[in-house]
Length: 491
Image 1 (tube, rainbow, N blue to C red):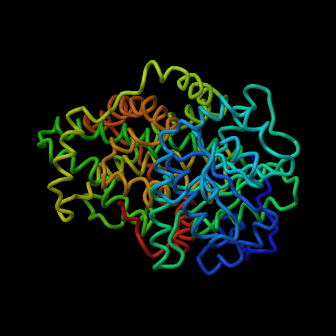
Image 2: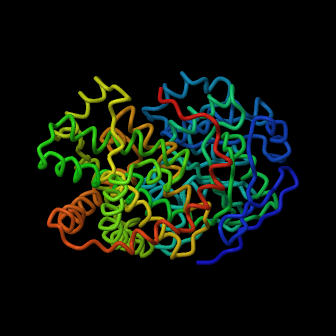
Image 3: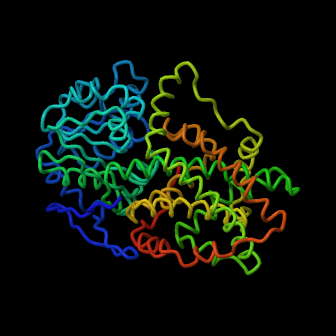
């Protein structure tokens, strides 16, 4: 999958970053660019944000605050939506024309940002398309709908722009870091953008304006198809599913070795979402290894070497399932069952109950950077990186979907609230993927990776040698130069 990622913009300043053996065009964000937004949204009198989930509520508020009245931002919801009152409390009201029934808002908007759930998109897209006026810009924050249209043999309307801006973090992070940006210019969540159809000739400018208005520190180009392939694979991989499986397998291993429940939790979940993620965020994947003493480096290298191969095999299976459409189809089918069979919670297991107590009594200095845990986590993360690289994804997308989104958005949130909390409260698509694939990672690590070390079998050290010289380290170094100086806070 090789695509031309270049683009032209007259409103913003495009620059090129050298990432390993490639040059990729980006646009840096910041509040000093907000006065350019009216030009980017030229011809748009109203932006309709459809949906009030985590992304909808964050994006509607960020857009309203950034545009400052130059363009009206209106939220569209079903009349019986349970989120109606929440939108009103956030300052969107029918009386001011900033809150209305979703199809009325769609038909009355020049740019429609569709942020309802993937399952709802699959069920209602025909009605949504029918409500769009010719020449409208349809905006998405996920490529799922394209994948679904491919499955059912349908297409986007030919007379509208189709663009995407996809923040590389959960909605809570999109809003929280935007608020931090009031004090520190450039704070925010990175985003990718895509232009699938450009009928108006303004699609690139509107996409870039949307991303800058959300507070993205930097925006890079992808395609709608590349985005959903990497995003769905990442959710099922290191961002949620694999992480869930990793920490549960490690918790049991540490308990079997005689650690207390609290200590096992600190050495598994707390270690990953705390010190390991913080070091990766600032110093990259190699930074974790360099921080360890000689004995701990050997433990890290062995854990990495046995975890990477099983992670690579599973990530290829996940990618194949996403690419074939099976994962998308399963989300649509599940959506039809959920009213009768709602998803249960995962936070009732002993491990997660222990975690509640550990977080309540947390002493940050008491959280270890466990070398075995770090080796397993980084090994599976690298397996995802290599899978996306093998299938031709842009380096910026690989770094953000596999590393930056994890350590700068999701993991800090999970450190505050718990991994189980995120898995129980993220999007339906991600929740389904995490529940399906976490047991596979748990099983593969427990049955195939850890026994190599526990039974003192030979470890293939060449696997770790490839890690030390991997191209991703240079990619992350370049990306780190554009990292905001603040860390996310969790409200």
